[in-house]
Structure formats: C-alpha cells, structure tokens
Image (tube, rainbow, N blue to C red; front, side):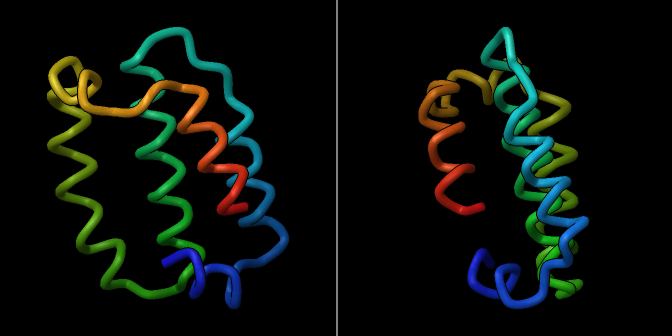
Length: 87
C-alpha cells in the first residue's frame, strides 16, 4: 500500500499524512485512532478503492472497541517512527 501511495499521492495527501503523524496523543486509545487515521489516509492516497473497502470495516470495528484494541497496538513512539518511515 505504501509503495502504491508513494507513486500516486499528491502533495496535499502527503501533507495530511504529515499532520496525522504529528498529532500528539495522550493515551493508547488516541494512538490507536491516530494509527487508524494514518492508514486510512494512506489507503486514500493509493487511489485504489479496494484498500478503502478493506479498511472501512476494520476501522469501524477497531474504533468501536478501541479500549480493547489499544492494548494490542504498539507504543506511540513505535507508531510515530513507523509513520515517519512510511512518509
């Protein structure tokens, strides 16, 4: 997904990814939401509707039960480093 986004992303889409990656988080739940938002925008940047169709139900389910899923998400430093590597 990142490879395809790298080929197709507009400057504005990259700026949105930067903004999401720079968004401060104060809890594991906020870090999880940030991670979901990042990957959703990355999927949009691919211009491939299949990625969005796959991510939408995952995003909705994880968002609904974020208290549970936050325990499985990496620490915010690791998430942040990963986002920067992708950007």
